[in-house]
Image 1 (cartoon, rainbow, N blue to C red):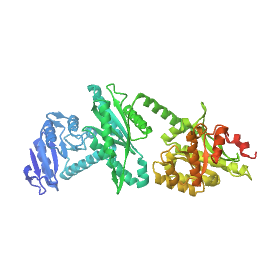
Image 2: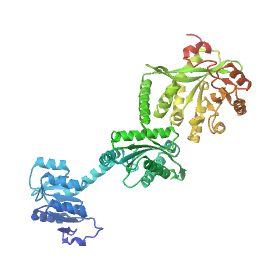
Image 3: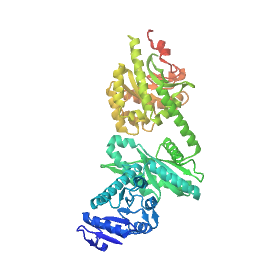
Image 4: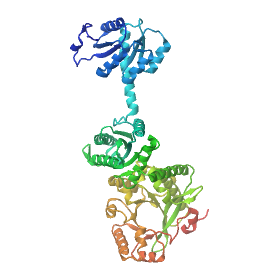
Length: 586
């Protein structure tokens, strides 16, 4: 039976209730017709916007109505012919989990009331103690509370920016998919996506543009998926995709390629055309379950890191070797954090010698890890891990501080001698860090070092991601009074352009050219051209990797200014260089 209670308080046929009316649909499941009539009369007295009442005497009829027509609220008796007690609430919740339920009971039982609310009811009203206003208020509050609960539940499981499922919901759906896979011997694929160079968008166009890009990426991602697949945002610029019932690696790769193609087209951000590349890691779970949802996501993440190591913009399918590399990377990261905490890093310095006079004009600061078990560890074994984990910023700040303190100490201990320039390497991550210039300025002031004795060495690859920003940073560093050198010159794709774009003072000729200078006229010609070009631009030249006297003689003949290598001295602790540098004892 359906009755519409209008705003005038008079019943009218349900068919006269237009679809645009703001009426609440109330389902009354009550086996006593008299109680149902009483509810109708009370709502008639208080109706302001109107109610559409539907009455059923049995729970199964009420459930059938909900499945067919829905409702905004249910008034439920706990003594029905086909369901009694809290079982009625539980059955309703299985078919309408987000529906507000108000229990109307003849029992004044506080324990039962509490249990009813725990089962999912919004309120517990006692027949005979309900007046029209209380009933109307209970309905309004129940609907508002349930709406708030649903909203909070959605927020807890979805990303606020993109509206995509978050990590928690993704893992839950993945767990369900793995369970179904175990039963049906199907395969599940997880794709882990990371936007390459997303930080450049944030730094150059602002975080608002970065957020708009993430929203647009999410929309394209959803459009590229099959029906039934799940896309999620894990945070930052990381997304994940769950693909069920895949036919194997080939189909998973096809999905990854379709996603990459969808994201290849330019994005429009505030009048700017922005291109995005995506690194994708793919992990397949077979019939054995593969360790649960966390393990599958971890494997996809490891594959994504491998894709990034290949230069980004590609996909990688997980294999067991990636898991081993990921474990080693985690172990190295933890060890690096402990090393920073326990001051296990030290600086060694390798002299740079003027070719004409043989005098030491500078040193390059080279970090070493004084490992408690392995002894002195070369940077080749940990710098890459420091870069990948972001610890290079903390480590770089320590190197700068220590090098500046040592430079100031040498200057004080060498009165009357020409200053010694200390060169410190800068990585791409350090250059991209927004606080780099402020950190350098504060370090110079704190240590009292003469900035003219400080040189930053920068590889060309460290400034290729965002030329304009890198140029701005290097100009700001130069304004502090220090000097800049381009390291490994000649190994990049646009070295000449780098000399024009960035404010370098010196060029370090890569050891690969120096190594062949004795036997290859072509290598010698390249070095001669680098020296000639550098001098024409007013830049000093430093040759790296000098190992014998013949290389020294050839470089001197080509006009190279400065040399560095094992022929002159190996990297050593400051105290071991005291005599070479003319440091006064004490």
